[in-house]
Length: 249
View 1 (cartoon, rainbow, N blue to C red):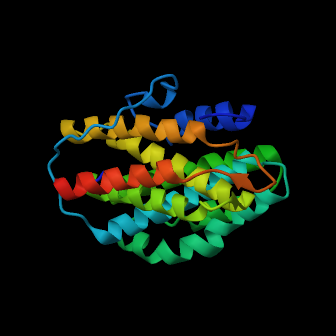
View 2 (view 1 turned 30 degrees about the vertical axis):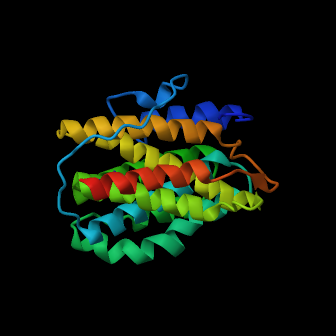
């Protein structure tokens, strides 16, 4: 089974995390997200391997990418760049997964995403965001992913994040923000896995969530306009460890 915070602005550090807890991005019962002073030690736990459904994984990753964009839209709400984050999911991500979601019985997410793309005042956008987030969470629930599906989605989101970061130097601010947001979504997936009835999987998810906390809190503030210097090595090590755990299962 596969499974620090220098310079973080007030909204990025507290607002996003608090909003995440409220909306379910990190909606696990474990509450590990907020154990910021605890250094996680990765552990290997034997869990029962379940058959993976590649289509479910693909759809989970697509939903995760949409949620990452919407997170960034809320992070920069009121700034011109917010419009791009609210438009991108509808025009670039959703079309690729719409048919698969429909086949899985998921209600059309188009109207909720269209409402966000339409913009409006901050209060309108916040309301539409909450509606979109509820629809996305419902879509994830209706996919009913196995533990294997969910952990594979975590790995794919982490790989996408690492792939956006330039290990040899400075990373474009927009690419860095997307990398950060995808890790936040991956973190939320681990919290959901921590609620698994499979106790081995749940324990593994808690341990890896704490490890991911350490990575996220070590990253520079996502509210950046200039290129960012960040070594993706910790993310790559996390991926390597998760993949090794999968191979050992």
